[in-house]
Length: 357
Image (cartoon, rainbow, N blue to C red; front, side, top):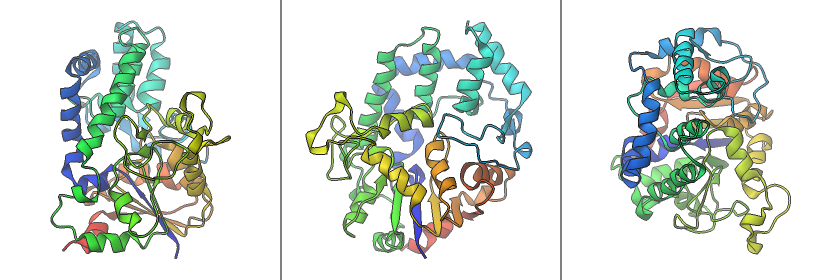
């Protein structure tokens, strides 16, 4: 059986807790405290920490999925989505009006619905680099931030995720994991895709004379037309950030760019990174396994899985406490399976327990 693996940050987090969201955000805030504090202060108006998840949206209305999800910014399909509650929508639109946005309904749809900012209004702080990018982009609309400040977020993100160079196999800190067993497990997959920037997978797969497909670049490549070929510092590595799926794919897909000419990687047409998306859509996998990957903000990846006619089964490894949740069931179908692909939800312990010492 040919099977592929798609890995997100949850994989790296289990191996090295330096990559936990809280630790990354702590480092991030220390680098640019003034910018972060301004973003937090502007977004504070929209917060209502009394909202529960069921107050924000209703998953029971999204039990069936169509095939109209494109590689645009929508987190869910246009006809079948997790519906945002009227109470949450009214709350946000009122605040947008107070802050002087010209078309609060349109801004709500773009930023809070399509880009997923609605999932931040019941949190007591902004979580994640891309969420900061969304917030700053939102307030750029009314002149609260500028393009240089948006770019600064990306620059600092490079430095933080570089983790002082401790981002490879030698940085594994989970003493329960048998690295030999992990290597053996990874060897069972014909291809491995990842949204991670670290080089843990690179180190393992180099021992097998292959490399992971970094869908958003990483510290093992310095150009979007190159396969992983080294280890690069924050100034030279190529990482893709964005506020939605469309923006990220637009940044990575073009092979030729006057602003990024490297004649050792000269290429017309689409980029090498874009080739990886074609692989995900076209290669003959019987199954794809998904671990540590939420699928949010990555419709350009999810859609390739849905469009791959060869994939007959999807295994999604999740937190064992949420396997039976209706939200988990609905999200998994909408994001990955569509109408034709069964999504089998399993505990992430089914992946990790066999590779413990």
